[in-house]
Image 1 (cartoon, rainbow, N blue to C red):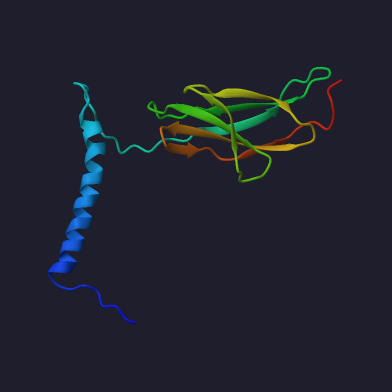
Image 2 (image 1 turned 60 degrees about the vertical axis):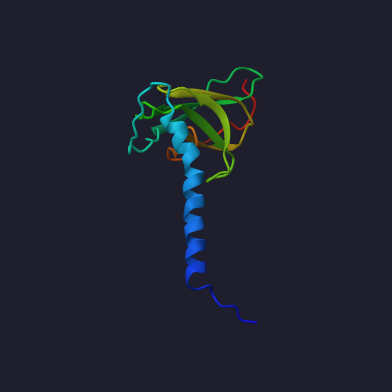
Length: 148
């Protein structure tokens, strides 16, 4: 059975109803933005800057302890970023797990209690609410055995 698309006033009403529904859905978000209690709000077209220059080095090793990796980077230049998340995976490209959340301008972290003879992949992620910007991925293999 072939159905014909509505024509004429019926089709126009469907389009208008869809546009109105979309506009009504946007009104609460706009109202939340405008209702500021006297505060000034500005919109920015700046992109969230990713942390840069991620470098990894073997951490100190003490007798009988697990391994560590030191991470250093240049913090995000976005002064409005909420945090920088240290993300780790044992697979290149992820999926990554957050192992720390640091407030900018933090630029270092030591990841401890790591398994020996394992390659870890890291990304530092700048965040602002639901927005994120990731650094380039870097990897380092941990030592082959317990520290002596």
